Image 1 (cartoon, one colour):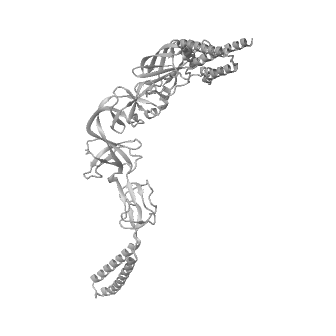
Image 2 (cartoon, rainbow, N blue to C red):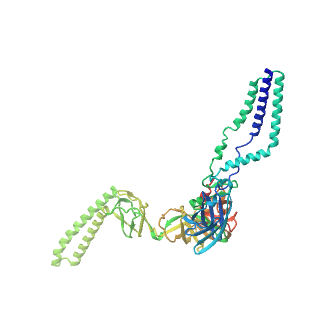
Image 3 (cartoon, one colour):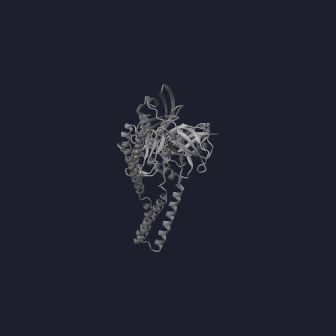
Length: 560
């Protein structure tokens, strides 16, 4: 009786061993794998016409329409958009610039929905057609709730795995049954059938299977909602998916490329200098101590007129010079005294006719000369030199302080006219007056230039060339560095694109982004040469007739 009970227990444990073995084998699969993610998480339709590009996005029973111009990617505002939908013809309501919306309860039903868009803008009408494909993963069920795409994928995968692995499961079950039967039989014949040992084997087989599924919360996966909005992303092939709302935020603009012949330009280093005919330096002719005029020294940026006194210079007098001057003053005072006495004697004698009137007049003239010399000697010690403005303009530089000892070669003031500025460039090629040129500042400002002349003597192995800045010169300053772009007679064929279109990749290669579809951008490696201040010439890597990004390329390059 006891042996019979032991055999029954062994048989039951063997059966459990078979189930555990097959269960462990059946669950030896990779549940972490998931179907590849689509580019966009929400259904959308694209349509293109001669002048417009349209993207319609269905979300929560509302169809949002983004309308842009095909060439420039500018949002089209104030248009009338009529949509032929499965529910009939509906007029879209303008939400904001270039965005329109309408109620679309039919967009929650899985399947293919053909749409016809009629766009009226600027007095012209165009018809665009598109197809909205709604997958079953996002369609609502009979009760109106949308089942999770993860859940349906999980169930569908289970069906495929069950059908594809029937033979493997049957073989595993038979192997486990035979193995369990052999072990139980051997132990029973030898009367060694400890149930604890069999249960330990059972736990050893079941535990790995349980641990393999530990953390696999299929219910939680099934309840995970899909993404509520699309995000810009870089795809596996290197292209970019950028939704229309993101394009609006980044202000992405495009243009269509065209092949043409352009004159080659050269880049020259340059700096802004004042016009030599409208600028001047103020220097003292002799060294001395500076003093300010009554109104004080002029401030930087103050406009002065020609002849205005800017400062005074009092020449220093050495001790030896003072001694000589005092001696000379004494001699002059003595001579003045003698002449005065002579005149006093000549005056009564001239009345009596003893002394002629000529002698009296000569004595008076001699006295006046001596007094003038004495007065000039006094002025040398006391009267300073006045420094006056040689031209009219604005004080650009000042190096004057009251009490400062000025040297004859020191520049105390620089005067310049801010409306008359030049650019001095250094060129390694010979430039002539018939070549157009522009200057570009570090901030990207473009300055048209007029040729003034070129030097015949080299400066640092280059020839200095002078240009006059034509137009507005506000905000510019002397000494500011610029880049001069001068056209040459040489012509080259290529595609001219804005400088902002070209970005530098991580490996140092120049790239432009082609707008291949409404929400897709593809990087193109190009080789460029400078053309002018705003554009570069693409000589290879880009074909004409494609749309490239002209604004926002730097921001697109940051998408990861």
